[in-house]
Length: 167
Image 1: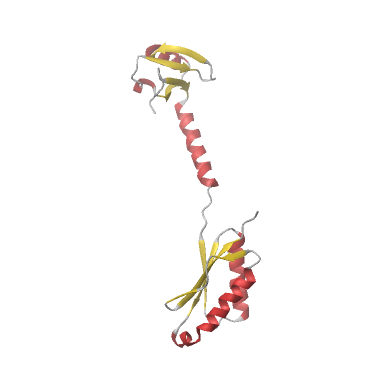
Image 2: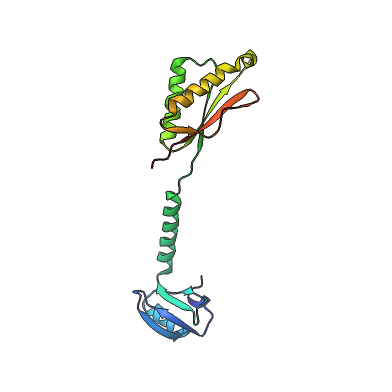
């Protein structure tokens, strides 16, 4: 975006700060009009014939553009995958505590990855881990759906839960 002396054409169509059309003016006259108002001449449509320039406070314009961009970025929510890890022999109270965390993550709109880690000889009893994950899925089925079936990868069994849409 070109401003003031950076605009290199003979004539421009000028729009005043309040939006009124000032018509087609030579560049020097347009610059002088902007200076008298202590504002900048900003080229807003360089492709037009002749190019369209607006008289405005360029610093204020840049500030409002940055603010608008920041607001737009703030409104974009990113969904994160939060992970809860446990063992196949996790006791009831610990399981309930982990369940509370998973429910909170889902209510906040995040995905939850529930992982059961097997250590040493626990690999001989993977069915305990499968039961644990199925119990977690059943306990959250009112607010979540499973993205896939539980998967075993190495010594870890995991499932990803997504919050149900709020339609």
